[in-house]
Length: 357
Ligand SMILES: [Fe+2]
Image 1 (spheres, rainbow, N blue to C red):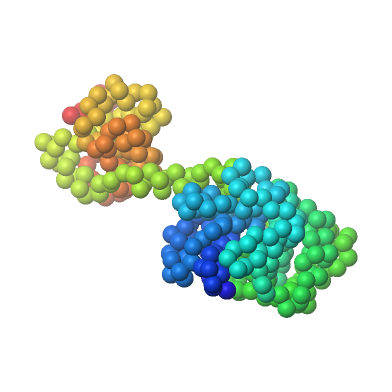
Image 2 (cartoon, rainbow, N blue to C red; image 1 turned 180 degrees about the vertical axis):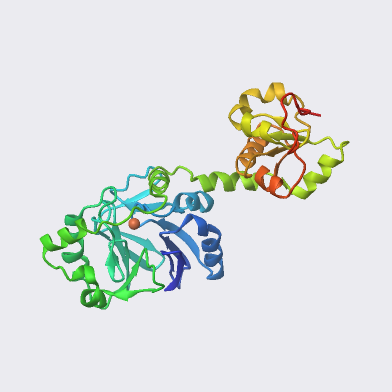
């Protein structure tokens, strides 16, 4: 078996491949590691055939949908998954065949209704059903402590004690344990009576994971994260540095249009000399009157450099093929002590800036 474990913060992903055929699966991939997985597959000489999420993750962004698009392979989840982009939904007792490997599915609801464990040879990928020294929580959407009790005590813990446990999370840098070790030492498994276990799970009082609403929104719908939207915009526009722009602002013959996409009050409080105001929220509807020449070189700027990147991407999509974004924003511009209009001491009433050049 070809085996790679990728830890991202506390999240664990697994690349599992067949020695003979070089076919592989990727289990619980995280969005931030897409290039890492593709590189690992190449390095191991395997081709990823399936992308598997053991359950709907609430604490990180799944890469399955985006990798499915890039690699042209199916997304696999348990039958109860709400995600519309899942290509293959597996029920309890079903298998997927990957080269010579057989991946056996156990439906193990509890952490979520769509949680499953996957057994391949001597390994069990437990998702968040069973963690090393812990279990998944049951207080997130579709969680159910009664179901988790059944999944653990009537299913998973009856498996071969020598079976190796590879969870979807570990926050202490451990790679795996075994069913036998967990039975003996996992504190959550010491309450073996249903009522006591359920009561313990209900009284854990855990804090909500950061980004939970965004993780559930994107993992359940296949929609994009804010970071993904920004990354896509960033990859589609060229940038100009603050110092380069300063040089061009000072060389008044430069024909660059500086387009400030902040709101009017921020613009009026201080902007790059010669900049024009066109707030991001009005960009599409006012662009025809404000920027009649699509061949002009346009540089977008905003407070921090994120909104201006989205604005430059939108302008390029609309045909302004020379739109670029400022690498940084007005905050950095001010902090660098670069020129502003109105100047710091020229805030007197009646002072107006050259709105354009
Ligand atoms: Fe989870």
